[in-house]
Image (cartoon, rainbow, N blue to C red):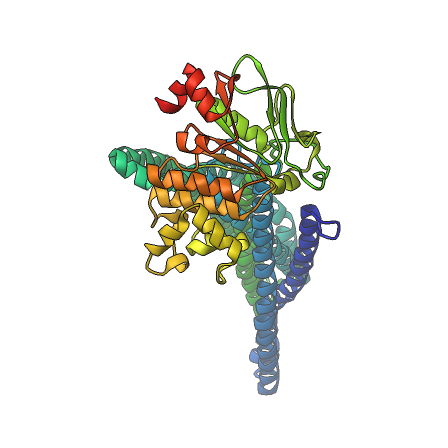
Length: 567
């Protein structure tokens, strides 16, 4: 992150301040609206006492004009207030989505630990939307407080007993509503957890659909999702039941409260303490109170669900990084010498390994776990438990992970392609203009030019989500071309040709050597065709260095190497 670029915390702070201003503005318009709503029954009562009872047509027209102006104010104040609240809610959800995505893409990693990709997507969408809606709920709560306060004052002016009933009864109703929202909060959290897990399972099944069909495992996959979906449905129904009970009980309590106000008002009118117009105003204010009190029930439900979603978002944002420390810049220029000292690669012994700058080094492994451990260390997805990994003599733990990955690119064999054209998947930043000379060389080296010639629109052909319109071997070639086009000082490839035929693999091996000549390249593979073009091969056997030399030397002299590579 550049010195002039704002941090994620700064962006969140500015966004929260902007949302607070919009909520305050919307609350102001809402208070005007609630004041007008509360004054309508008061004005009607005045009209009855002063114009209708007195049969004064002039006053009646005047008060009707005042009511018309009041309704115009009500309309505009509601529109402006709702607009501010909705904007604050949408901006809050958008800001949270960006914060979650920024955390997931943080070079230090860690946010995805224990979560499926679909679960992270659910947090960034549904949970962010629910938390954003809290802004609207808060604003609506302020509206409701203003409405109740105005009604209480109007009722106190009309009748002290009625005003006191509102002032004493409203806090009790709010407290009961808060207690009733607790089960909803717990069940909403469980609902979101189950729904996110179901989304994650669905995303995984869709991503592996071709493999599942090839294995004939569609029925097992459908059954797995059906079980997960049923659990999610049960959690959703429990949350819905909790919400319906909470809403129903709050409405029942609210109805009883309004009935009490109407009963007391009617008794006072019979005793002569209230005029007919005042009784109409009191009943109208009591009915008006239904709106604010129902709003409080809705606000409690929104806050309960928002708190549950906020906890899930906080879990992602506060997740411990996968690697810690490291703020130094990568030494310039990058020579590309990698060195492992005292590092364990899945075995009991520590490993010392030198990967010289400017050479094409092959690493053959007898245990895939050792290859995975090596790749994670070189890409700094994890730090070694013992020893150190160095780039040009500097421990990777001292380097900024983002800067490191711009210099050391670890290209996994199972990486994903993006929706878009073949060219956009190869060129940096998804550029789709005509291929430049470097891109043409890269396409030829990875034999993607052959793939392009078989497609209806060449490199402009859409490859579909995840490259599903391509075969496995074609996807591998596009992934290799993308890694080569990035031109990193150090390129680490993991099994880049497992799905291509032997003739194409030999051509790719030759193209790789020519294109990366003079730059550090490491190929972790057991492919004889790729290992044959390397300058040097290292065999990692059971987490230790088993043998070193050229491919020809090891094939002749080392039985373990022949077993690993030629068997």
